[in-house]
Image (cartoon, rainbow, N blue to C red; front, side, top):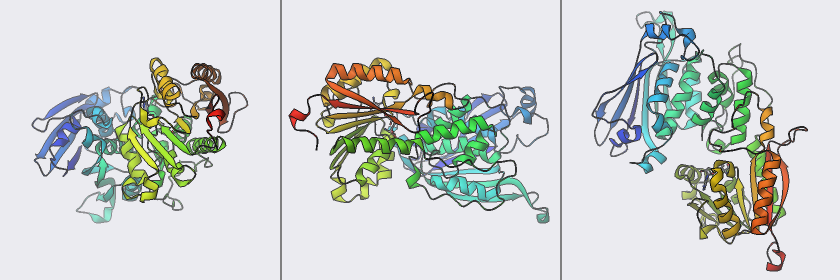
Length: 481
Ligand code: SAH
């Protein structure tokens, strides 16, 4: 089982840094079902190729039958696992390139954060749905896809095609994203990931899908197949994806019309489409900004810029600042907003910069309103006091809009055991959020009111909660409209 990843970004040998695997050595990584090797068939300035080869030991695969072993139901002595790229390859890739998948590279941070010219080849990918499905899943992610069915036996073309596809992908894609695309989509195409799927598989999917899955036109098919048709987990995954946002949606091609009969018979039709919570949240924040008459807005922890895009569409917001601590999020925001080709008038309204909310920063001072949309729950509780001081005490916007998950609502996400997102440090009940907001408002001279976001549930309240802080005595300062 073989997978190659090549780049022509110069110096191409930086691929070794980005993958955290040295080009001069062959390295081995033991897996419960065999051995993974990483080596570089070519490594020079112009072009560098890393190969991941997985040697599956069918005996070991059969012996590791059990809940912890991937593919245990395939643990027969005779099967295609040893030579086909498959869910096992995805498991090995996930393990061997864990750090690269997280987008971390201290030695080459710029190259890790930005798209690179990449080519990926998989000579034998088991693919239920054939070359068309491979194209349909990879193309919206920015890949040029070459997919060819592998004939059952080239000597007897009349036998037709095997279930394998020879796949080549070319594109300008961030390496971490490319690895995560493969990590998720290889088992989806293979569709034989039969092992018991634990609730933390949803976390794995959400984490690996960060920045691309929520906006993928086939996210439902992907979640369905990835999670092995366990409906409760699928529903949870889709609800959580909707919650995270349709962040990349606008940059993607429109969904492909599904041909009649193309859906395998054991898959139910998609449930009724619902408005994603992320969209409802942005609308609620925009409505609050309008209600308080804000003309200048600082979006703190702007992420990939979904709210900024909405703010730019409305001329009343004459000055917009967007700040985030993540270089990667800012790079995505720059691309989605088309910052490089934005007309000057528009460009002049926007300042986009890196910064941390726990340090005093003059660039976020002097705004009518600041927004912390789904940000506070990403901050370690001991650091929250610093954030309160920086935003309410030092930047002192006339208004501050804060949204955060309502933890009480989590019981409505079937199968969800931990937090909605693996990076959340906490999720608060309505009482906990109110207690925090009142204390912070009191400390820095603000009043606070609350609004629900999303359809409120009679027992557990709305999925998202929002607090609107108003600086006390602002009328005397002549603020507002
Ligand atoms: N507001 C956006 C993104 C929410 S995700 C939206 O609702 O779509 C949370 C964001 O907060 C991430 O982009 C993360 O990088 C950012 N963040 C977390 N801690 C931060 C800090 N201390 N300073 C600045 N940004 C931070």
